[in-house]
Image (cartoon, rainbow, N blue to C red; front, top):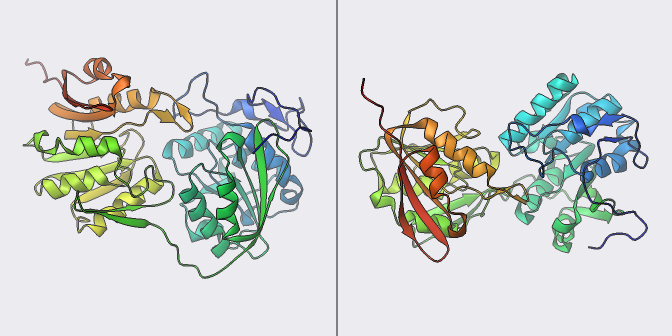
Length: 406
């Protein structure tokens, strides 16, 4: 997709304020600059909103002005820009909001409290209730076609017949394949004019052919003897990530007398299921901040007859886990925050693992070879050695230091 030559293009940095329904204005109809990402990673090159939020709001302004908030659903809102601007500008309440990431959900709560808008919305899971009889949907489009398909399927099946979907994304992440996916669920998909490297889509005419969802997907991997299940937003889908596949080779070396193991950032549940399958006496807790990942891990556990062996918990960086409560933690850390390559999330997870490991406990970690996290792991967790290395990945084991004797 190309920029519309009739729309001015700038650097793409977020505006601090906007008047919805007009071009950029200095008046403070809503001050996006007040928004924070916390408790997610915050850095100079990471923002709490992008121009797509403003563009969606402008496209939907006339409809939102006459809408009942109880029939408005907001999906994919990163840190609350769509939700809080809608509540503030249009005075709407009872907004239904879905965010896959727990850190984004908590950031929205913090931003809402600071703006005095905490009672204007309800956070909900991705499911039929989110879109039930919705007449307006505001949607920050995902990059994944599978996630796009799962959400589009739910809107089409459960929203009102006259629903109007105002969607948008960054042009560099939008493809013509997205139009094909949406066209399978809606009779009309109309692209709008690009603005500040974002483009809107207006989607109407749901094709309602039953309410059963095709998610989670599932796939059997004979080499691992595992069924893997995945909801649309889960990283890697139903595949075994290549780094995870390398890490699994080291299962026999992981702490043998461990009673409790944590799969930190469980994704589709590959590591959790492999651990539970290989170690019948091990209690496995899978945790991820992604709601889709937690649901996928639960589905994977059920598909492999391991539902009674794996506890899946939605949690951000082990915040809900007691210090010193785990003997073994296994981690394949992400090397990006959203669409931005950034090491901050890995370091956040290293610190979390260090806090939760019991003295003598092990953190097993796999990461891209060029990242060289060994020094950071030794400093944050404890003595670290390289357990294995291939052309793409490094596997390390870090030992939590024993408590000094009195």
